[in-house]
Image (spheres, rainbow, N blue to C red):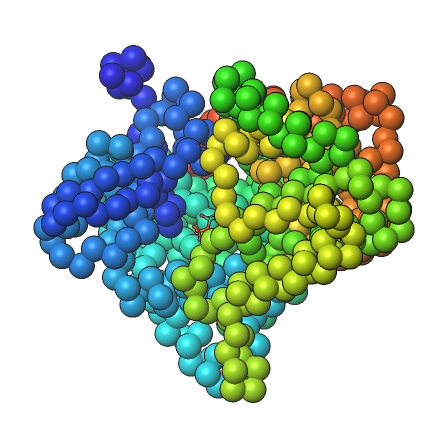
Length: 501
Ligand code: G6P
């Protein structure tokens, strides 16, 4: 019915991302149940009327048999999704290995894995080969479904090899690539053994986008220093061909959050939370459980604050939601001597240990200063929590953008709480004027900022909130998607004009 309501001649947009926005559960030999996950990208693209989006990606499950693959493809087609089937070995080498063990930590300034040199080099090569093979498999599916005039938008660090594969199929295809993580300083990117090949394949795209100008600048200087290409204010030039490089900061579907606060269940939940924490200021952290999020540092800063401010000890509570992810990534591990430790497990037990110590130290028989949850919350519970929070702590060590900060601001029209935000999150460049910016590595500074936030006058909170709320409301995910796609269309037209001159 959606199709009828929209203009007949909309442009088709093929969105290619590692993960489809669905979770698929097999119910029988040829039956699947699907649930659409309403992440930022999905709601962004649903809201855009100018084009008709189709998704191409991995469904997150291994489907070795043809009957199952056919049934899943059919079920996904109804949701405008097209699957790329990856077998277990490819997933292991490409997703667990090259994407999550090599590129993810490197792009977040955690460096390359530093185990036994020879072993790393060997697995590095096979993982890179699997990465290229997986990207080629994505390209095959795109090519199969591509129609002339379509726009192809590739997403994230999983698919850096895709623009090149696509242009080899069809040099006229309009190809854009967007990175959702930081792009690190060229000095960091230089350490990657496949540095040149990856840069060259990204440059095959017509438009390359990042969340911030800094990331775009890092990318251009990597192309200059590593490939010897000329960087211009427009992008990167190679033998007369220009790849446009620009910043497109993402946003959220803010109305979805604002509307949620009027749902009776959410109002009821907010009431319960307020009663539960009556007489105490609520501080909140919501993070995927990942090394980059700086959860231990944040909790240590909270401990320091309690240590130095005895009068606040029974008047403040920190709620930390740590959502488990990538728990199947065995490569999130390191080898020390001959013991291999799982980094995420280590991180979890480290966080538990610190929380236990602080609660033992500052808790009473009836109340503890930290509530820590190792799980996700549903959308409504999360909105209620955002709305009753006095101070949000977003203290990632590095983060592409960090939309938790945006979601918090969207839910704070009534309360006008304070956002403490890492200067190493992309969001610092858009919400910096309203937030208290901190260096998350400096525990003393973060502890002081907690005091500043809790003691802030209502006028100052109002002023800071106004700034951020305006930004979050006007810079939406929908606007982000529209801007990127129209810039991609323009870039291709300009390039054609240049050639015909
Ligand atoms: C980050 C990445 C996304 C990814 C998400 C969840 O935000 O930029 O591309 O989808 O994490 O990680 P996962 O590995 O579970 O897809």
